[in-house]
Image 1 (cartoon, rainbow, N blue to C red):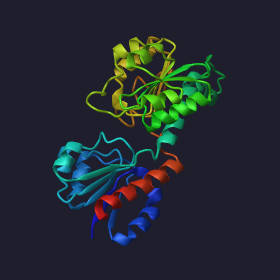
Image 2: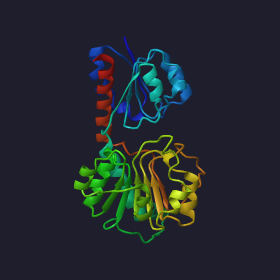
Image 3: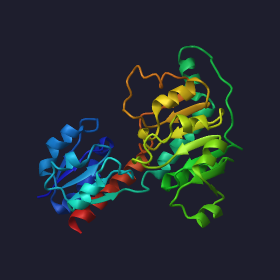
Length: 309
């Protein structure tokens, strides 16, 4: 009997579906019920007798994977593979698949929601209203503004369609984008520097790699418009958070919103989250009923394909 580890916190609600799909294969499921992601040490302790993993953001680096001698398949619950050492997997015959596109619409909707919330100071006004204060700041409209997308994969593409639907113009940069398809969609394909300097909103939709880590640094932020807003629903490590704090504090950019952070949850006294022009949500981009169902189904189906096809 093969033993399957399931780590994503939101997967618990999909347990019945998973057990039904896996029933013909007679597997034993080990499901994370802690309500939090596993640490590297916890993964090392669990993995020695595991044959397959459905993994969320839990670490699967080389050191962790070395503790999994029986592991044959990793099914990513989502699209990003930055927590999986793909080189180690290739060397040791571990198959890897991801649930690409299953949560793209939900993450895209949150990116748009964060644009509205930041532009209209929704969080600031809400907090004041809860305290009995009718505090408000003059915001701005999204219609007529230029949105720059750094990354035009499934999520970036959905963001572009939604943004154009509310009257925004869209620029994008992505070395893998099909220029003809992009042109036909009414998106301007350009370079990163042009987006940084000309766009009113910049939204990040790319993986965390050695090349992209900390790409939004002091220089990046210094070249943005002082009226511009930065949106990050991708990975916290893309942004130098100290540089972002300084840019927001000194008015180099107007605002920023992020669904991801370098350390989740952030420390209670984190200086960045205390700013009125910064919004942080709790990694909820893919956490909708629809996305959870699609992602869970595809993750299970991918695991079955790798282990039993």
